[in-house]
Amino acid sequence: MTPSQTPLITETIQGEPNPQDKQIMVDGMLAHHARKGHPRKTDTFSILLKDNTGVLKGVVVASVLWNGLHIDTLWIDETVRNQKWGSTLMSLAEKEGCLRGATIAYTDTFTWQAPDFYEKMGYSLYGKIDNFPEGNSLSYYWKKIG
Image (cartoon, rainbow, N blue to C red; front, side):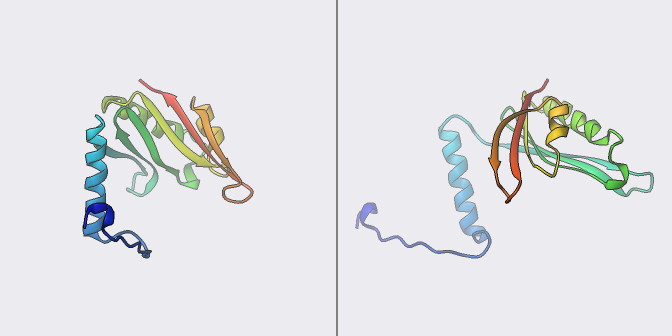
């Protein structure tokens, strides 16, 4: 049989593919990116905010891919919100992103999370999914950094 005649099947599973199948998928995606001139290497870092007893009070988790800094997660404990810690962590993440080669930063946020915060930080809205989840929106933001 030729490849076009090889019978294929589909399979729906719970969760992610098994480790072997996942590795085949990842290797295939990375090879495709490299063939297109964009070898993919993600550099993830976190900046933690802790109190004097070592308890986590905030964190920003970010990833640099090519020249983009993706803000994966920003969380500030309720007890220290509205004290500029979110802005501080974001500024530190943007500076670290620049040191790692980023020239833009981007993220997404839901209506009930932080759209106003990102706009105050200089981020511009570039996309929005309305009624997701129902009655709310998912917004996408970006800005130049460095």
